[in-house]
Length: 409
Image (cartoon, rainbow, N blue to C red; front, side):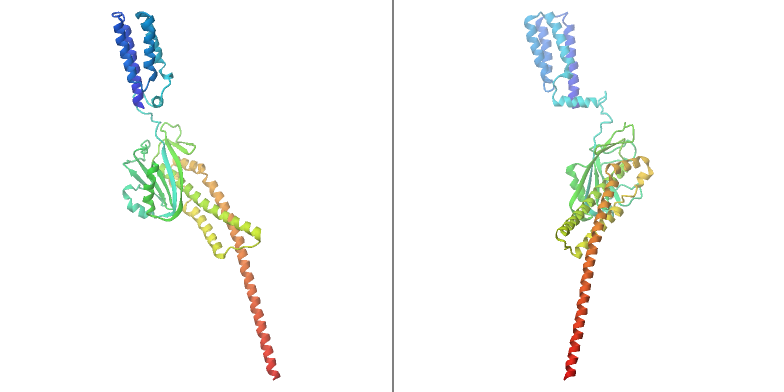
């Protein structure tokens, strides 16, 4: 697109110079052959750039035919000169094609020396995945030592791996994620993976690296997407938007902070769906009890639901660490601002409150059904005792009758 803009500018300059040379030579040579040669040169130049300016050659040709037939050479020079100047000055208002429009946009984003504006950096795609409930971080680091990034905090539930020809990116303005250099991968012990600057067709390759060390693979993988934009000239450290966050620069600590929130969010989405499934199951049980007045669930099935609810709650609180503040956010207010904003953006507190409310509903139903099963068991035991007492009474009566018969004989 820059080449198209340079060609456009070059053509305009050459056309203007030829017009000036034409006017300067009019005093010494007024023959029609001199004019025809000059105008033919201009027409040839416009035709050579016809892919960028379709109307130019046709406009000049029509002017030649009209003026050559009815005006003198001197009048034609003045009319032709003013017409061409008007045509050149009106280039930006012509019906340009798509390439020229793109070059205009790029021209606005460039400086006079042809360099790109520092603010026009490509956006960095961020993709979060959750496909297992546990990852062995120790074995993962052992097999990927060249890619391991030394941690800057005491958090031990995740590791950061970098891929590509990357240099040190911890300092301000030394961003590495420009769309071509490489990518980072944040892997959490509870099963979340967050990829920075990875294309869609390369995702499976990076997920295979982690899948070798994962356990508790899920039947369906959860996925979420986000975006990070860099703008060094930003007046504030960060600025939030719809499905993106804009920073002055992105470094490894920023990746850790953003990855921690996205990893918690995608995992919380999975556990939320698990709890929703339990709520739907208990809803069906209550409706069946309402319709038939009977409870048919087995004790084993109920215990399985109790274990599932308790494990989900424990995973959310203990493994995800939703109520633990990031060490990086504690040390630096800039990353604390990112952490607070993303937690609010992804509504982690509200979603956990909703999850906790649903778990309380499940717990209430479990307690109610346990009481029903307990009462059912108590009733069974009571009837069993009654049966045993009745049997004992019958045996006693039989013994009494038998002894009475023996005494009669």
